[in-house]
Image 1: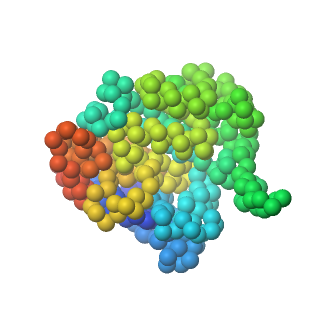
Image 2 (image 1 turned 60 degrees about the vertical axis):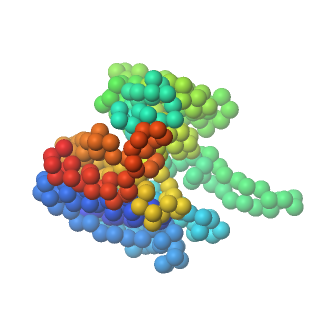
Image 3 (image 1 turned 45 degrees about the vertical axis):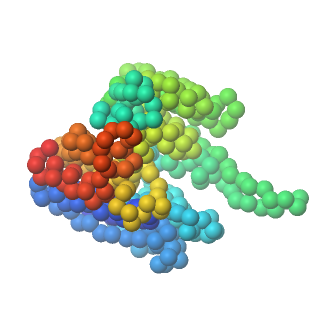
Length: 364
């Protein structure tokens, strides 16, 4: 494979997924025209859309498409329409299946507050200004994958069981991901656990501490998850890189997303030893699907992460990020980030995509 030719599997999914993915692909196409990138983009079904068509959330054809590609771009999955299905058939099982089969054990979620969106945050400007956090979430362990699991009847009543399991090896590899990320930033790593009540996360703390001896240049701290949740609201600027478990990372990153003004702004990268999968962290938002009001910027920024992490194209990634900053500086806002009392008229999904494309072509 040449440096400029890449295969991308596109899985738009459900709800607003196809809408935001479409705009991200338009931005990627504009960048390709400007830079000479050669892209082989192929689309598949996943989530509820796949269940409606094939009777399963992750068809073998979509999985094969993902495994044969250099990177995967995912929209969103799920919605009330499929909530009555058995757990094995729910759209969200496609996410877990992709992570497991692609070997994606590290989820990177940057939480960056854009200067032009300070007033969109529910927190005071003085609290959020300058916030720049990277949350590194372990992705293939914890309650999401542990066994035994399920609901059974015992003694005449139903019992729900999920098992929190982590091996030393799983902790060690995500810890190294966190330390390497911190080494490339401000050299501060915070490990978040609940070691005071959960033995599994006492092991987490012990192993992260052991790995830290290999990174004497990185300052390592530990914090209980409940305190971290409070500190994210109290003083988010204190954090550089946070490494944590699957469930804690899921919750904390959504909390941190609102610091930025909207969950629609945040991209993510799920990485392993090979290909990566890229998606906005928001859900499928079926209530606004088809209304041209979804924010595509999280998905567009996910494409920038794809260029950087899977294709080693940092310059091209920065062009997309700079284009997003430029449209925000120009005052363009989708409904979720327009804010009250700003006097700004929200633009639609397509109009926001148009604006980013123009900035790419204008050399922003």
